[in-house]
Length: 195
Image: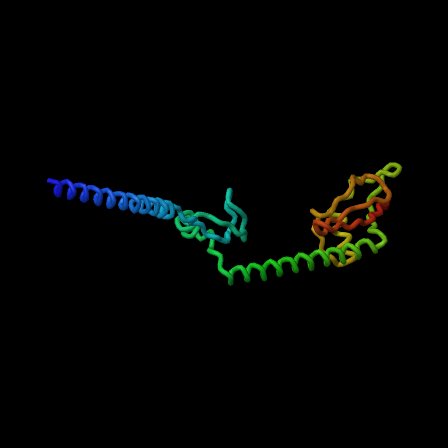
């Protein structure tokens, strides 16, 4: 019986050792598993960098770089042709186009400044109207009258919408403004005389 007890005690102790060893291994495995599970559960950010081909309300303007979700791009923007995925070649083309547009804006502004100098060097534009009592004239001088005089004297086409005139109902000298560019305004003298 002593041998059975020693066998039993040996088998129980080896079983305990093997169980203890397995417990440590099981703990290590569970630690590894939780580490792997956390990594596996991370969601990958599924965003696409795009360039808008047209203005979209609540999203952006044409030519703007945006980051949108892949599904929104794939299911809405791409089928309707409203956006395009950014590529290095496309970025380079956009940069060249922006530089061309900036150069065009500068050229237009310089032309407006030259035209403003031409208008300001002219002594004044004379307008003749039928006279009334004292300094009063019949009718008034309108922007279209000034546009016609500029065309006759300088052979320049000017849109009447850019002409800003004070209310002219008397003989005298007035200053009119021509808004040639958002940043360039020419001041011109208008001399009203009676026939």
